[in-house]
Image 1: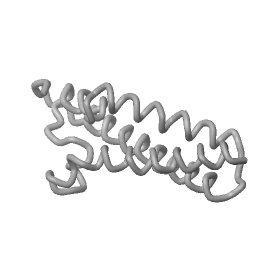
Image 2 (image 1 turned 180 degrees about the vertical axis):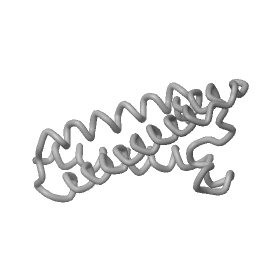
Image 3 (image 1 turned 60 degrees about the horizontal axis):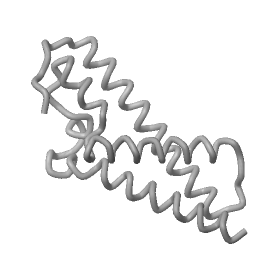
Image 4 (image 1 turned 90 degrees about the vertical axis):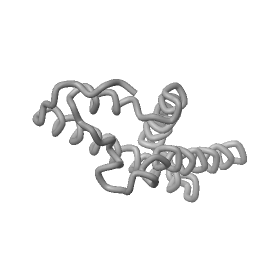
Length: 117
């Protein structure tokens, strides 16, 4: 992992805030996909949610399960990864993978529904 940069509290706050917003949006996207998968809900929002989840899945695959934003955390001297702020270290390591699996299941449910309709 890349060395920590010079500690910059303002930028650490900005990166953590941005990471929080992005995480919330991805959780909302998962909710939209599941809702659409179990109901007849259709909208542009479903397409956007699918695109967001697929993009996140590709990025996590390319970065070997590590969120690309962790590099910003390190660049500005943040010694904690995003989920380390809220969870014990052992549990925090598996959160990204768990969220992607949950999202992928939602995407599969929606795709099966679309293919059967």
